[in-house]
Length: 463
Image 1: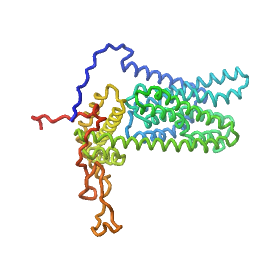
Image 2 (image 1 turned 60 degrees about the horizontal axis):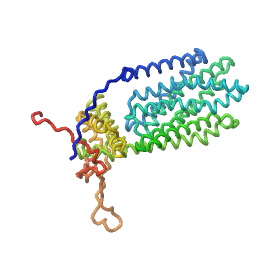
Image 3 (image 1 turned 90 degrees about the horizontal axis):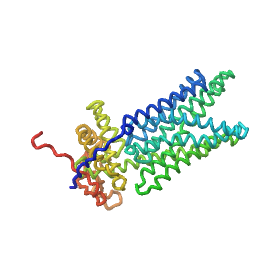
Image 4 (image 1 turned 135 degrees about the vertical axis):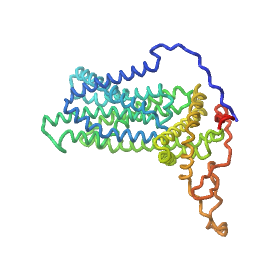
């Protein structure tokens, strides 16, 4: 059995005051807070107090739905909440402020240079706004990709980070548009369904709440594919995010320019491009999520052989239904703390599987051993609560036992052939009996540099 190499001792290095974590966090929080105050003042100035409150109340409606959808996609390997809070705050404050200032300046400059305000507004909406807004939103994805690389493992993470950022941006933009529409209705006296506010709400909140997330998700997919690329392909890792950003800008420009295609241009672009693109990206994200579950089932048996996991755990951890059952059982028997322990166990096991996959592909980095040991130690401390729940979930979600077939049925075309079982099961003794494998999982030759170390042994003088 391969052993784990000792933890490397890092030499002490003097760090300047600006390199300390609390300084970076403080600077980032201050930047976002100042951006939020400035954007609040700008939006309130343009919409008025009543328009701001009305826009805020209507714009907040799609936010919980979009955030819940992206969190559902991220259930296999959920990222920390602080990353999502940062992304939403960046989109709602920093990116929105950059977009408002840059779009206004560019539109005024074009109008002054061409002496044609109508053409300046059209050019600003179809050319300037997509470039500025998508670049501002992509900055959040880039920051998470560079400084939270441990939490950025693939396409799903890129989609979630980009989608949450775009949700925050759309929230602020909807406040501005709905507030201005309410101000227009106050001047004209329109109310009800015929009002500008109702039309704006229908177009931006009912029909296209996913418009901005859909654009920015293309950038996130580019970063996600770059995260899956081997480390030696530096050119590919640089070009993929740029290609995703350009696609996001192009789709955004098409969406903003749909009004110039005639009376039905908006509905034509919506039906011909937006709906198919939304369906295609939804399929891609769901497929990527299933691919993550397959990675968990494929990588964890190596830790079964090393003694860190039981034979039933890779199957349970690779099934979202089994995970839900395990958390529910833990909640029933150990309360909320037990459910949190199982959720933490599932997250650590998934991170170990992804880390091992990166190691096989040559993308683990110098801290592979240290990070693997941290995750395995966390699994070892949580095993008392998590293992029984996961084993119960594995039994509950196991395929039902095949019905016995009479001997006379074989060979006459009415029976079934010999039943074979996967690597996690053996022939059952009951309809829902655990069917663990008796096979051993020898490490593949490619696993040699990353063979998992054995779990700690109990002290001989302790119970």
